[in-house]
Image (tube, rainbow, N blue to C red; front, side, top):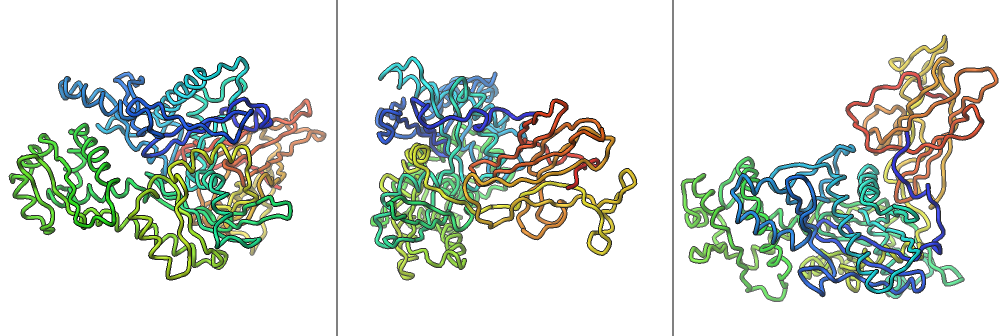
Length: 604
């Protein structure tokens, strides 16, 4: 077994590449940027989107036809879908796939290679295919733009994809395999994944260094990457060396959750559910049956209103058009008119404009959609700042598209001003990750990371009465072992230097077996002794072969982990008959419910 292309399979010096292209693949929007080896610090942001020649990002909306082939992306996908749906019968319109916010499907999920994402109408396709089609389209756009400028006969590209720091290793592998399927790693090109908050930190390094609170030789700051889907929060210690170089150490593991800008949209949807007295089943049915109308109402109309809210204009009113088809469906379900439903709503500040089919929402109600989301972000920051290692933090830096919100910024600034913590918003917060990914590729200053989980492998160990669990006792070839032992390589909250590797050597339990499956486990705790203890979960596996038993044969299995990078690198080496190492990679996209217990395992 060997998983698809990995960065380490084609090592290159940064000097080998002619172009560095970053793809900020976001929940709400996608961005593209490029620099060259001639002038690596001159980063060009792609702005030639169809909807606007000056837009720096394109809405992350994908339209596919009934065969699952590409139709359109971004604003054009929404327009084309609306046009096609308006011309076709409902049953024909449902043959299209409109994917919106599909990146969020990879967060906090039990992911396998066959994992599917749901389109607006409820139809599903494999996540890897949907992402690959998107990346292939974005690849075509940026390469066309590059060729319009200067054609390079020996072009070699480092493709840099940004991923949330709070994503699981399996989610990162889906992105890598989708990128490979999209052709990003073809030929001399390679794919590199970069954590979004770290990319932003590299982009904002100059700003961070100039802040009053971080003028000391060693200083601490909290960076919150507030995107459309998730909020990624990291805490760094910045150290200035005598040579004027800067190194960054992560001092608290990345934290966050699904409370980005779209969580505000979700609060609006909850209000509509209460307003129209809809059950969860009725709401789902309406969203899937009238997906075109619902998507336009929430993804376009409400999004525009949300982004325009200004804390200084407290008397402003916002209008959201409720499509006539939605009104008719709701009125039929509830045997009441929309006007009657709005009239009976306990919040009397929401008004129904029947003539224009508009829901009129005052400033205070719009703010209420933000309130629980901002509160969740503040609660996470509070929790982090209470940790002893985070006490020295005197600066909070907000980046990401959601950080553009003045409402979010003012709330966070006010909350922490009394604690004498300076809250800043980066210059061009929406570009911090996109541009920072290229800066990271050229000048990575991250020195160490904090482990988000304990990692190790399942193994057999010589049974020790009084030490091991009696229920774990097994006999193999006349020897007594303890099964399911958790052989740890690294523990949660441990600080690990970049590029550091951990290595353990194991030998087969039985002389009769020459094929093994090495199961790699993770755990949210540090004190697990067995792989089925509370908090433990299967991360992935490696299948290996060792020589058949011979008194003179080397049957050792050497397992090497590099865990401090963007991705977990686990390699297994076995001495085969030719005495050469067999180098295998970890597969993270296994089905957790089908993996069988490995009885003929390994023991050190």
